[in-house]
Image (cartoon, rainbow, N blue to C red; front, side, top):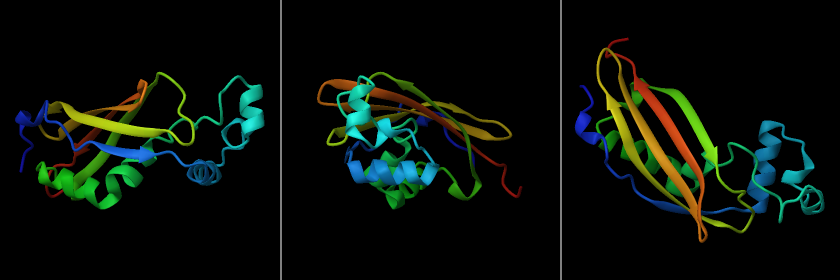
Length: 149
């Protein structure tokens, strides 16, 4: 079943996520990040930050811890995306301001583009904001392998 180009412009469920210092530490351990600015407030302030900023790509966890892992897959299926054929194509971020522990992030996303053909491609744009405005803009694209492949 092909994806409908009518999905372009569709808003995704918004969600909030509170950044926890312990989760940032766990993330750093998981990816092998050893720069102390991400876990030591003294080192972070010495480097010019207000507190320990989240490391690059930490916001990918917002989807699974904020939106919810099961909700993510269920909502994609509800859009007609066959998640059994899904391949992650790209992820691109524009960092506007640091995000610190204790910050409540609101994520608002939409489907920004749909291309159909031998393989269908869906591009999502998400803006992560705190109470002062946007912090990170993210763009993710997925493709669906042809049926039977």
